[in-house]
Length: 116
Image (tube, rainbow, N blue to C red; front, top):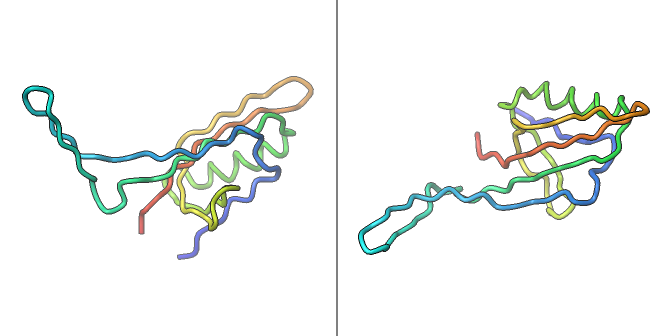
């Protein structure tokens, strides 16, 4: 199965971020002692927060349509400016604010996917 690649009509605005999200198993013991370990082989995933400060209605519609077509469950490829290769991600969270004069503001959160 080939994956679609997300090509936004306009590059995201400055302030787009990438942060690691860790999944750990943690055990708390008496006297404040705790022990933690990786929960699985891929316990570190990247989370990308993208924002577009100024989009036309058509540009916002294109991003919204792509994300809706993936329904939050289907992975797709995204090439972040600071990654050397596209990353497989899903998107369950996005927000569109319609501003004055037919312009829009848009944010989306992409989480790296390790699904087969």
